[in-house]
Amino acid sequence: MCGIVGAVSERDVQGILLEGLRRLEYRGYDSAGMAVVNGSNQTQRAREVGKVAALADAVTAHPLEGHLGIAHTRWATHGVPSQVNAHPHMSGERLAIVHNGIIENYQELRDELKAEGFEFTSQTDTEVVAHLIEKHYRKLGKLYDAVKAAITRLRGAYALSVVHADEPDHMVVCREGSPLVVGVGIGENFIASDQLALLPVTDRFMFLEEGDIADIRRNSIEIHDREGTPVERDITRFEHGADSADKGEYRHFMLKEIYEQPKVIKATMEGRVTGSRVLEQALGTEAANLLDNVRHVQIIACGTSYHAGMVARYWIEELAGVPCSVEVASEFRYRKHVIQPDTLFLCISQSGETADTLAALRQAKKAGFRAALAICNVPGSSLVRESDLVIMTQAGPEIGVASTKAFTTQLTALLIFTLALARHNGLAEDKEAEIVKALHLVPGQVSDILALNAGIEEMSKAFMDKFHSLFLGRGSQFPVAMEGALKLKEISYIHAEAYPAGELKHGPLALVDSEMPVVTVAPNNDLVEKLKSNLEEVRARGGELFVFADKSAGVQEEEGIHVMQLPEVHEITAPIVYTVPLQLLSYHVAVLKGTDVDQPRNLAKSVTVE
Ligand code: HGA
Image 1 (tube, helix red, strand yellow):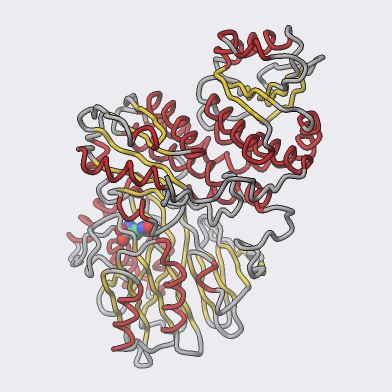
Image 2 (cartoon, rainbow, N blue to C red; image 1 turned 120 degrees about the vertical axis):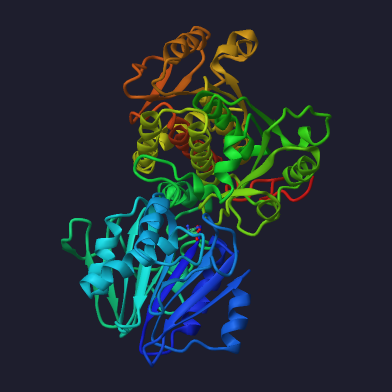
């Protein structure tokens, strides 16, 4: 999603803005621009199509000099990537604005403002906000009051930064549904979508909260919350390097990445959902048109991403009522397949360079699929460049070879996609709201699971001397069981097999004895009673069960059944939450066995070979 950066300083801000944009380029790179209020109190603007380098060339040739400025790198949602649609947008010659997000009611506002005489030069939703603020500015005479009044009319998601040449000593910023951080300097202050943009100029940050509006000056930062109450937000210091290439306080990258999940799941939702709705344009300018015409979804992926695709199949068929097939890329690419008309090709890869997935995508593009959608974690990767639509997961760099946060953010992105598709296929508004609300609870629920770490570590001791294990799940928890088994195999080298619980008596039950631990995930859904019978089948054969169960599911700790009670979770979002204890279980088993957790034998990250 787009990146914004802003600065108010005693020094010239052009260089700060450009460097900030370079660092934000992973968030969008179809065009870039900046606006600077110069020494003669004029707003000057430069905008270029393409990467930040094109803007850098333009402003090197014709510098924008001044002490107050805002800048933007765009990933279009409304209006094609072009110079006129690039940010900053202006109303008149003096007010400029950058925006990250989507204004859902932009058409209604645009009609209204047009009728009042405002002239539009772009197709974006953002320009509407520029004119709306200008309209209030003419009445109220203060930029802060104008922004405050204007945002009461906005529906959707936004982070905004606004400057006006009549008030050359400050910018006004606000956020609702899209990220915004204030960088605190000495005699200068900054704002950006992501603190990484500002690391060359400060290491002190204030994270604005939903509904906050802030007045940013060289020597002051004044913040009001949604109710208009003055508030202080804590200043946190960025630990250099702690965020990605450094394990920080953690013993392994994998553990650090497991613990990052609440934050990155939230980041993957940002700008894509409101409190009760999915913003489908966050999937791209062409999303609405495309989703209207999708009659079938073909998911292709490898490894952990394949398991994410398998969960999505349950969601897509249940919520959107659209048939969905899932296949591993290395199989799909080497067989003849029949393509149903109007099939969306959906490929999932953490790195965006997975050789088999890429090859399948390239084939698919020739084979007559309606369009290709990629779910990916690495901006600028081949998969991202070659797909028609992209949903970036915001997991950040994943260093541990065994994927953890990439998986749960893929699930988050897939659920958002499913809801957008489902809306085009008749999903009721209240059902969408129920699921979006449940999705908002996921980061907190994952934190609750992380708090159970010590108990899971204790449980892991029972696996240390075992050679085999079974993982069981039903419905959308079956792929979660598969992912749990894969984690255990990858890092502890214990043979683990996943089965749909109902398949147990069709073969694998023959393997069950006291040497074969059986791990089961049991959320409280309509399959839980059936699952309980499956557990009895195991117990009757002397098998030892390790059950991760919703505390309201009624699974009791007994001889041979170890139960870890988990918080109550909505049935649809349960696969995201239930993955986490299985990650922790594998992690602790691997640590006890002394394997190389982050770089397990024979494996590599980003599988760029067949
Ligand atoms: N809706 C605005 C901003 C898009 C955005 O935030 N993308 O990530 C536009 O289309 O310009």
